[in-house]
Image (tube, rainbow, N blue to C red; front, side):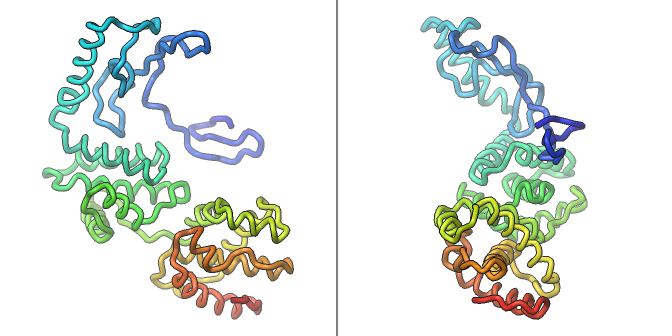
Length: 324
């Protein structure tokens, strides 16, 4: 991998992997070596996006309760007690100040990001949008948690297939964290903030979920076992499945799909694609409705319902019979 003009690029094929972001910390002190204590200290370059932060460095690392000097030697008991008290005072009210609501919202964002397994770029983009809305709002923000949920929705939609998280998943994870956030409230708040953010929530297209659906299927042990049993090389099958899903989705216009959930629709297209691949290469299908449901956590009846509609269109458009 190499970096070029703000992007991480594959050195072999030139494919742009992702955007390059500057880390919000700077390393001071000696580098860690195998035969010496770790004397490395990280300091903030300024106001980091995802937390309420002060200028300068922490006393030790973020959660340290045992302190060492620059040479890695432990401090005396009296000095340990002194720095522990100073760190506790600095790390709470003095650092947070009058930003307690922001602090709790950003702390929730960090927790939610870990549960959804989002990368740091999506998290920091969410925090940036949240701080932007708060700073430009005329009145006081009445619900900071709902606002951070809306900003998270904006961020994942902006990153497209790099963060294929559904609106339902965002609402559910906030509820798991103990907050009263639902899909309707997020959409309503996003529409209310449209004039300020310039963004209105749009329904994702099914193809945005193709990488995620393929990943979920190929990371299931039972699916991999059946792929090998059918005589497929896993990577070859994965590539053919991805290509076929995109072809199937391209055959079905949005007018025919109607208001169907795009993620569930993509899962059903994957099930149909597996049957088309099996027919094309004269092999037995890998996926069953039950196995697809287990791997993607989509209800069997939803896959069955969507597949019925997909099957009719494929057979009509291409004169290919899709076996149930």
